[in-house]
Image 1: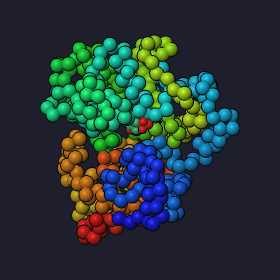
Image 2: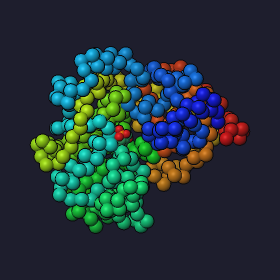
Image 3: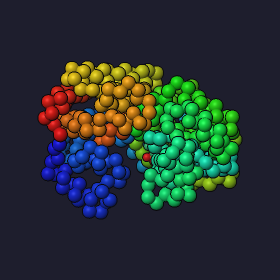
Image 4: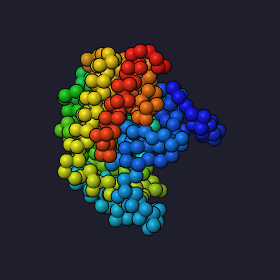
Length: 435
Ligand SMILES: *Cc1c(COP(=O)(O)O)cnc(C)c1O
């Protein structure tokens, strides 16, 4: 792995006053080794680092940049919004328009509230589920990430159907015990859990396509089973589409898999790269939110005019006919090319795609539908692949447990270049000359 003197110095300087040198842990390259690349600017499908190296970007700021970086229409919208003032803390028409647009695309949402991050959206959706039902327990699934609020930084206890344990210091066990963690895609565990705790369960939160443990696709019937038990026990079904919303399809994953949630959380793409989140859903539940109801939620910068107007400009593009079909076809080409490059080199490798997001797996396992299967993938091979690609100008997520993203700016040439980089990297891995 290669780190330039300049990058090493920048990281050292950053680490002086910023914990670990980063403002979000995954950026620190702990999952792949080495020091993070400091980015100077970005345009279209590319990033440039502080040494002026160019990279084809498959992180897209962890999802939002579906139109590529610095899209001229978005930049213009933000510039114009800035001229009109950065924040007022009072209602604006742009908020109404963005709410209208989202409710039109996602008919499951009657009312929607904007936040500043996905974390705030999921945290509040859970508070709402608890406030609405008057119950305390929440079910989440192993390997799913829903932001960093206390109730959601919880993993499974040592035995099945035991109550959760905190995954972070500072989360009181008294909080964690209200969160039950079940295996993803395990309908039987879900049903058993509801049989045991059904009357205490406020809601279930799920990533409809899991993108924070690499990429795991919901098994047929899994999301429907959640709907069924939530109906039976009058619990709230929260679909966390912060990553998948407007990413796997215009209508998000719940329309793709034909399931109707009670509440939906959004983020990432809706702000086109500005800090934003949102939660919305059924009127009778959303009416419990202040000022209409007794579940409190607020934000000084919520519905920020720059974020709203950036989002509105972005929706104009993604709503165009054929937008997602083209993205999907482009990504399918990339993944087919990566697969044949791996096969040629004799590297155990698999890929999966849902819409405009993908997973890469260094494994020969057939079944990739569980968190356990993700843990069994070869993380050393991923590290080698990551650095081989980085050195060849391809920027992948610096962790084997993150999904990848493509943008509408990734051209045929970018795809070909990426495949060529992968060919060389796979051969190098096979010859053991990396690492
Ligand atoms: C990114 C993400 C979040 C958290 O959003 P932030 O804006 O980082 O707080 C929540 N849920 C899912 C599924 C995510 O991918």
